[in-house]
Length: 319
Ligand code: BGC
Image (cartoon, rainbow, N blue to C red; front, side, top):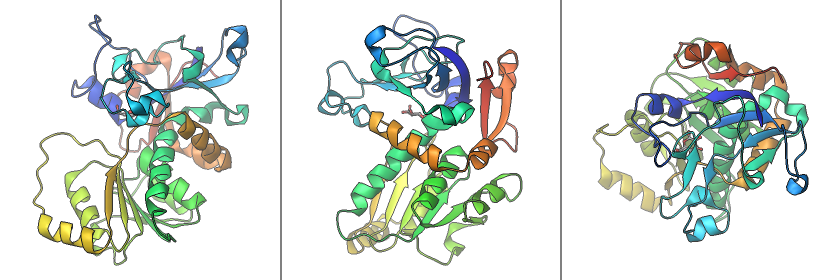
C-alpha cells in the first residue's frame, strides 16, 4: 500500500511520551501510526484487492492462542490481552510511505470518501461504542432521546455525529468556548456546552465520555438516569484520584438499571459500520474536522499540539 495520509491521535502522544505502547518483539523501536489511508500498490490476484483501491489497515490483530473472542474475529473483545496493534502494541504502524499487510486486515473504502477516508479508524471506535450501546439498550424496550457527549475532540465529535444520524437530541460538553468546535456541534443540530455537568439541567439517556478526565467521569456517573447508559471511551492516565460516593452510585445504578461500560478498538464489522457513517455524513463537515494537514517533510509539526487542533493529519501524497 502506498500511504496517502495518516491521522494523529491522543494515543500517539502517549506513545511519544513513553506512557504507553510496545515495540515489536526483538526491536528497540516502534513505527507509529494507526489511523491509515492508502492506495493499493500491488495485490495478489485472488486477494479481493486491485491496484489503486482506497484502503485502510485494521489496527488490531487477534491473539495467536486464539481466545474465544479472537477466534471468531472479535479481536476488539480479546480475552487474554495477547492481541497486537499496528503502531501501538508489538506491531509496526502505518507511518511509512509504503506498508504491507495481509488482505484480511485491509478494508476497501468507497472511493467517494477520498482523503476523508483518514477519518475511518477513529470512526470505527465510535461505531463499536454505538454498537454496544445499542445492544445494551435493547435489553428492554428502549426509546433513547437525549445524548450527551463529553469532549469535543475527534472522538467526541464522531460520537455526536452518529447520535445526530440516529435522530437523537445531541449535547456536547467541552472546556473550550471558542475555536471550531462549537460551530461543528451546532452544524450537527446539536447544543454545545461549557462549564460543569451538574448544571446541565436535564438527564441524558446515553452519555459517551470521550475525555478520560477523572472529574468529568465522576460527574458523568452521577448524571446517569433511569435505564441510562454511560459509555467510557477515553483512556485515562493512571493516578487520577477523585472522591466518589460509591454507596450513592451503586444505589442509583441498582435502583435505576444503570450501566457503565468501557469500549475499545473495533472489529471488521465496525469498519463496515464506520464507512456507512462517513458516507452518510456531510463531506464538508467531515473536511472541517481535519483541522490541519502537514506534509510528510513537516511531520514533526503534526506531533505538536496547537489550541485549535481537532484532527491533525500527515499528508504523504495527494490522493
Ligand atoms: C486506537 C484503538 C486501540 C486503542 C488502544 C486507540 O487510539 O484507536 O484502535 O485499540 O487506542 O490501544
